Image: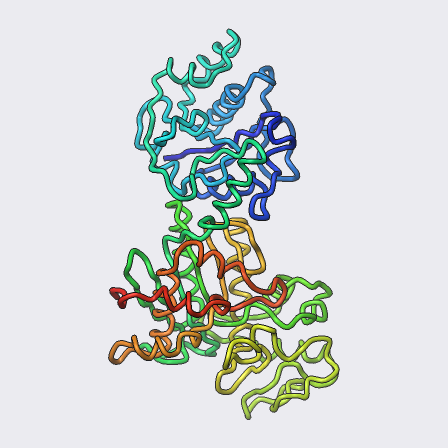
Length: 482
């Protein structure tokens, strides 16, 4: 179905004492939460409000002649806008309902009634529903006659209650007053953002040509965990891997599902590096800088050594990037590790001093080196950020809820488990991402959410490093592999 949606935010917010749309929950305005939930489900979004809301970017639909007449006025504005969109039905939902179901439109669309309203065991949710645009004249007439009660209108025009199950997060919780906000914060903290339908773990590669046809080490291996099954995937190029990931994300958004994607390369650099390179203490400034400088073709040909050389040319003494093939002769990249004295940043991130065996993000070549993987991986992740916008968030740099979450992971955290759970003839890289996907999929929502939110907001963090015992507890019997 082609269903546009309208967020109802035209109320006076008297019980809250301030504009509810901008009230923060988990570090994000209520409007942002509702928008995140509805955007993947609707062909277009608008907001019913008296004025533009802090540059939300949404089309604003005022109540017009019926200002002050309650939510029915906002619903009429929604129907008028939906008719202009050429839609047969329009979704409405209030701005104070931050945990709306990810499949709200799909479930409501099963009803063919002129009004389909969400209902839970605790009652009918009269402003959460699908409305036929053919009701415009009847609703305008009702408002002109003094109608103000939503249920009186819906009862008179064939509304059908569509049952929704209750859940731990209380999908239809209304945040009307400060006490409700406290309840919502508790729900957010305990179960909130961490329900994922699909978990993907990616072992990245900095190969400069397509890897062998037969799955091999030092290549890209992907494990996708869903419904107690894990699907392995092998990609010969970075472009092939990203096409798979982008398609998976598009499918998740279209079906109202959530995806967690982990990559095994550093998302950040030691504190001070971003400012030294870009002038901003923002990890995403580095991502954007690299995206503008790195060339990485569909056949894996790339200029990562040239980019590292250019970065090193900005600093004195020699470094910070080091190591290169013996046949290469970069002007500014030393073959051996420099002393790391005189730089406005350390050699390692704090997380690399905590995670045993983790490599520095500045070693380009050699055993265990990951710097080349980051130089080629971060531009790809920046491409995902550009493509999916507010539907994607990167932990721990961003705390907002989103359907797509990216995180940095390190498979060696579960080295013993990887060794014990390997299948015969399985490439170790494939085993590592499979086991990490199984562990994440087995965690409770609260534990998963907590792990994703911990860490340094400038340097980044490795998922699960804070609580390895809990991470291991997510591993039950080996998941079915298909």
